[in-house]
Image (cartoon, rainbow, N blue to C red; front, top):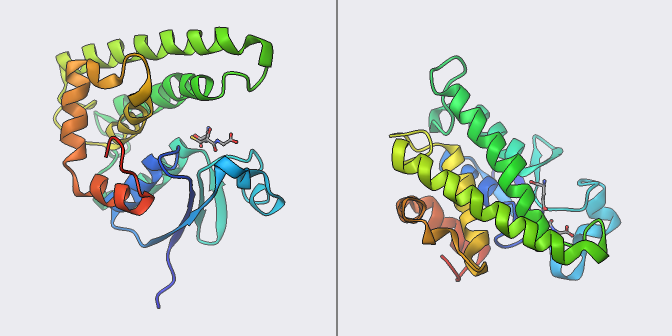
Length: 213
Ligand SMILES: N[C@@H](CCC(=O)N[C@@H](CS)C(=O)NCC(=O)O)C(=O)O
């Protein structure tokens, strides 16, 4: 059997989701290795050796382990330009692409980390952190929704690109929040559009996601 080009360490529905979708969209060969984060497998010495922060995802590229979901997805877009997940370097849309990737990774994804792990750095402050992140995430959806209303239907306009997949992962993470992302109409329309792509169905099957699938 031909060796897989990539190995993705994942936990169902976690930050690996955007990397998994990008792998499928590029048509690359890959294999999946599940990490049981509920039972702390991300903190075993074997896993810490490839991901010192003890989180998913990790992507093995040509035998070398790499981390950080946003950078992994961007790396895949770069290594598989035919998939057109990112506008070419020097093209008019490149700045918007970079801006959205960094906004989603720096701002929204960090707030989600706080929402899901509010006591990460200071257990006594957890409740305030949780409320802070909820407010920040809702402001983020309002910002995205307004942008989509004015410049959509995709984040970069008429063309589907990687930031859309990134946003889709974050939308799914908000499904049990007091105000799910799909309460914002243009975001809901984007989710419907993206979930109709075959990559979404395949990702849900491979990660065994049944909720918000
Ligand atoms: N900045 C990292 C964050 C990854 C992250 O927070 N992953 C979560 C799941 S979504 C995780 O592994 N949680 C288990 C833990 O922190 O113990 C990335 O984007 O790859």
